[in-house]
Length: 320
Image (cartoon, rainbow, N blue to C red):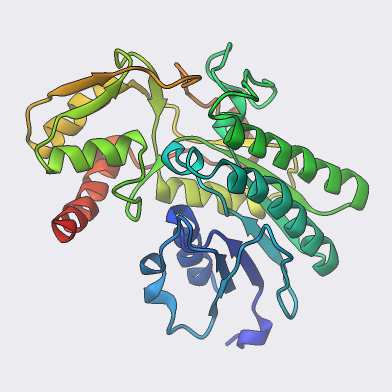
């Protein structure tokens, strides 16, 4: 039986967040020694409190925009520290830019010193409001750098550029994932993104907030599928960006109707102006993920929403 010192060691930044906490679970289950790091600005210790008694789990309360030190050897780094919802990054745009720029620089430097492989969490938002559909990795995007969403979009674009520079100049082993809309248990009720907003509103008997006329599209990937894609990409030999998401596209209005049926309420939309630079279409081309990683989503939206609803039912009742 492997001792703790024999195990691969992985640092997961943003480890108390929605995605980060699921990654902690997965890598512990795979037999890794997991070090989670989070400044708890948008993360929540409740997401990882079930892990604190485990001998192969550590937690560091730290902001990666400041110098990052982890004692001992490190084999892998997953950089998932960042606000990911407009409700967050519009409140703290400077911190969002700093975690994408300074935080990424710090972690790439740590990877270089430790000779660790690092996977950077990028986003479909690097494509902006796209001119091509579905979005392929070779598309360079349509982003407004001075718009309200620029703090997040450009932080992630800079993050990718910095990662490639470290790969090319310092031979750091790097991986880049572009994440499309992901959902599942541990999303915050006040996250601000469409799925938690719709589920929370439906469970409280409120009208569902629809921006624009609801004709804009999104593609929703269940968190377990995303985590599997991240795991495969980290252990692959491919260093260029890879889209991971579910290509099953749906309009926001149709999605609202789906949520209403699932929760047994009447669909009562409340229409509001579309936010500036909000993408009208979003759907990943996952050809690379299929061919390079042998990955594609397994959990259909109906099943994923059922699982997520159970989590939200429990937490909405607690909040009341």
